[in-house]
Length: 237
Ligand SMILES: Nc1ncnc2c1ncn2[C@@H]1O[C@H](COP(=O)(O)OP(=O)(O)OP(=O)(O)O)[C@@H](O)[C@H]1O
Image (cartoon, rainbow, N blue to C red):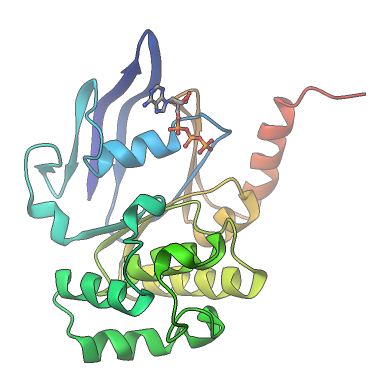
């Protein structure tokens, strides 16, 4: 369970995040949407203790992420390329992550087999370093790396961007399956309302750092979100 209490983040005189209370139970597939600058990455960064909140606290299973290390074995994330290690090959990167999560090479290899179509022959045994891969392939490496060892909580920032349609579908199926069958908690931020609605059983909309909608996904959700974002669009003639 993730508990967010009175979290704020201020840069200069601008409050970019301001969330009173948010609870994300185990096994929830939580979608975070919002326009550019809404505060999605900031929220994930505070949650992962990558940046310090200006006030408030975030607890994972009752442990304050800014004060404890225990939560780190339960959580994996891919937020941006800084999570990658450019001088490793993808295989070396996956083994490294596997080691952190108690997976030996054989179990990592076994796990990676299911992604062979996902990788499309361009990642494993491709003779390239992570830094030399295309943006889309780097994203695949980061996302798959976050899945190794099936951690309890998986945080993915914009996982669908830059991915080809087949890979998007594969990833959506995996997210749905793991959250239903294995009670993995997913936190996914995306600009893609359709993908987010498909994989999330709850969607929170952030606007200027504040929660403006918190929806249990239902057949009307996509329409509700599209209407919400359309309202803020100024027509260009
Ligand atoms: N280090 C920083 N210094 C100053 N302002 C920052 C810093 N990091 C983020 N911000 C500001 O915080 C706000 C929220 O940014 P954030 O990256 O969390 O938004 P986002 O919802 O992830 O946006 P996007 O959809 O564009 O990725 C933005 O106004 C951004 O400019």
